[in-house]
Amino acid sequence: HLQIVATMVIGLGHSAVAHREYPAATVSRGEVPPEEVPMTVLIEELTREAAKRAYEAGATVILPTGSIEQHGAHLPVFTDTLVVSHIAREAARAATARLHVAGTPPSVLVAPTVHTGVSHHHLPFAGTMSLPATTYIDVVSDLVRCLAGHGVARVLILNGHGGNEHPNGTVVQRLVHDEGVHVVLARAGYRTLGREAMAALGTYDQIGRANV
Image 1 (tube, one colour):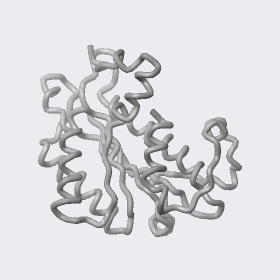
Image 2 (cartoon, rainbow, N blue to C red; image 1 turned 90 degrees about the vertical axis):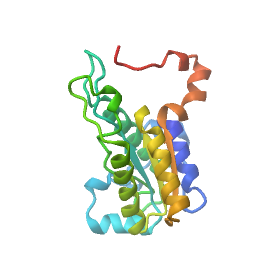
Image 3 (cartoon, rainbow, N blue to C red; image 1 turned 180 degrees about the vertical axis):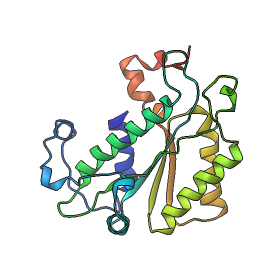
């Protein structure tokens, strides 16, 4: 998942960001010169000036979307959010290591994860917290508008919960086609992105919900 998401992010910003390529194996072993890798890719850890510099330099932003819903008797209700947050952060670090030019801001940033998703179908189970689809769409749309308003040119909405898939599609339709927001906007689920790679490994058919 990490390498596939990182590759998508690189493709999203490849034509607009000056970059230096490092072999994927080198990146995964942590052999990229440490002085050339930014300290953080998390927007929440940046100052306003650091965020401004990164946006102006053309950083791509990943906006993860998760959920708070039951995952059976053996997993926490935060599972979807934990997983998509981890994948987004590690993918951003891998992509930044491959694209980064020494002395410049991070090439890829991760916005704080949208924790609560559209999970009404799990409300009979304790611990589940859900937003109406209309509210969720408004929230995610406003977050993308904030990024675009500050000069972010490319945003990837990375989803970790099935109930958010169609609402995320509505966000893209609304902002790009209805409003013409000046941002390159894409949305995808990490499981969908990894389908071909997992099928090649013979593992895709084994994926299901972890709430049995």
